[in-house]
Amino acid sequence: MSKIFKIGIIGLGCRGYEVGKRVLNILPSVKITALCDKYEDRIERACEFLEDKNVFKSTDYKKLIDEADVDCVYVSCDWEMHAPISVYAMEKGVAVACEVGGAYTLQECYDLVEAYEKTKTPIMFMENCCFDKTETTVVNMVKDGLFGDIVYCSGAYGHDLREEVTNGTANRHYRERNYMQRCCENYPTHELGPIAQILKINKGNRMVKLFSVASKSAGMDEYIRQGRKADAHLKVGDFKQGDVVITNITCENGALITLKLDTSLPRSYHREFAIAGTKGRYTALMDEVFLDGDNEWKKSKPLSDYLKYVPPYWSPEEEKRIKECGHGGMDYIEFVHFFSALEKGEEMPVDVYDMASWMCITPLSEQSIATGQAVDVPDFTNGKYKTRG
Image 1 (cartoon, helix red, strand yellow):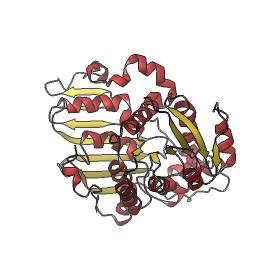
Image 2 (cartoon, one colour):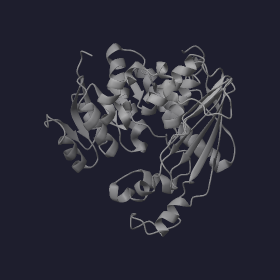
Image 3 (cartoon, helix red, strand yellow):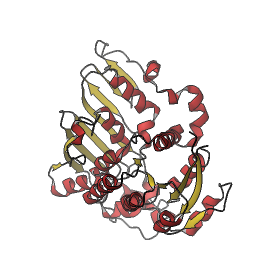
Image 4 (cartoon, helix red, strand yellow):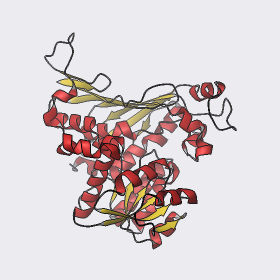
């Protein structure tokens, strides 16, 4: 890339700080020119990793967008503000790289699409798992027809977040209030993003109906009972979020998707990515590729046996170079794709229609859990998904 993009970071908590330091600060095509957070100490801390510390600083995102010398902004603040900030930036003609998280209302999703269609300001939903080595390799295998017609996909956000959630006040982290006030699939996109790409959601296919159920909320209560480190004000019974939420989504082409949120119980991290088709399947939990004709009683092949399907940007040399840039390198790769599309004026690899349809799972799941009924998933492309490809 020949152009140097000037970027402002809005939200300098753990995620914004780490991406700023490990990715944006080292990309040769990027210059961080503005910083914003509602907490001034976070802004000053972020200045420490910048060579040029004379950057625009503000606790007001509108002031940054209106007054700072920026070509684009990276939105990495609390979930509640992702959509409003993204909409404001698009309306001001400032390109957006927006972090992931579920929407709070369905209207937010419509607002994002409306702002983009009105302004055509570039926006990308920064779902890094769409660029992970495992998921991108499997996507290429699907495209090559190795698994046949894909019938079922599943995935999870399986992550023990008990310490992070229960220390939300002390750490100024928004997850605490979310787990206290809502019961929903609050973080659906890590698993849904790659699945949506496999099933060509918004590009020939779409999600049609959703049904979610939630277990009781007990994990956070037990964590507090054990006297583990937690905010002093928390007590048993404060949390509304179910420990495990299962969401089933039917698609227009007949495929079924299952998402699982599992973040309030003891466990190791895993996204439990899996697909099943008419010619075979892949299961990440066992790292197992099973193809039609294999012996079901013998060990199947690992994904590493299919190196020809690994994208070029995951070459061994590149992987070694970027592995310390966050999440094994996929954070770096997603930003390279963002800035490349921005420079070339191309469609973003994860666009506003993906953003709206993936984020809407959160308020729809909340509605489904509350009512015990299936709900319709909107078509944010307004019929254009039939010819997009």
